[in-house]
Length: 536
Image (cartoon, rainbow, N blue to C red; front, side, top):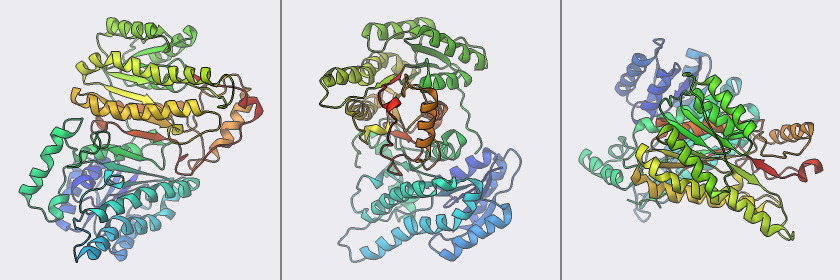
């Protein structure tokens, strides 16, 4: 049975997170400065706990080291373990830089939003190492975007994001994952707590409902669901990642004004390109297992049929997957794919653009331009065309688009410039289309994998050489392994679910800590380096 400690859990995001963990069967610690509110949330946790588990109530001030030490000691004395730490407590104090009181405001903000997180996490490491636990830090989009007269708050959140990445790399070998959730505008009592009147607070939220691509501001439950996802085994290959849950705020250029997670996609239709193997196949099977109608497509008819059979085997209602043999580089094939899907199911709810290749070629190679064109045509052009012809169908269902990108969208790799460019462009496509299609009720997000053990890599290589390469690469990752297809599939299902309804224009990095640990490139054995990568 998991045990979750959530700071600032007497109200707002923290309270919603505590209640959701309790509902999922966890033992929960509710803590805050107001004893009455702590007790009130603890009662709500008890009411939703499937086993009638009583939450531990601890009144504490996160700015006091003594209180934090007592919080941890009391938690350990009561439950004997700590599995999950959610650093949620925070303040956002407004003050102009030339205000005489600025330095005091700055120190207060840093002490609450950063120092307390560092101290509490530090004293929890020995407990989390024993449980192979999780740390989730509640940051903000203000870690990357300024807000007038909130410089102290923005700095604290920027530092918190870097803390998350550094700790993910450092604590990975201890079996501890560290991630952050970065909300946009979420309706809580933070403005009232910062001194605003209730009327002013109410007035501040409303513009975002009109300006955000998703058509609403965030609810505390949106962030709670993101936290529970990151704490779950379904996100076991995600560490050092900032999960942006902002309703499309950043994608729309800012508008500067643990229990196992299960999903129910019954009645939904999911079309996954490149689903005859690898990440695509794992994603199709997971959707089928969750009750969805699935379209399996790829160039190899035998593999398409094989995956379709696996989908049938796991489907709770024995739903038969639609099999479509198609080449994503052919516009005619893509049009036929969509037409056949609509003819069969009458709609499309979820589009997963997964098919891709990674062709290796030095820039001064005489064949480079051909390699470049092939890579762009497969990894970018096909996504643009397929998404374009699906918009009219997705608008009717208020659907989802999930694009499979890569950590190589932001990190170079020797002799893979065409692949890196295609993925960088795909990331920007995701953000632009999220902003543009939000008004149609369509959400658009990315999953950006690190090294994943699939057949995209080195299709002609010897199996033992492939295994050795993956095993060695995994040793460089904080989580101690490379990814598997189901890791990415679980990330896709989360982004397609109602639990992520406030997430659009976001890049969900699922890389085992690759970027956080600055893993650049491991030398590839000659047997592998002569091969190209293909995912179909």
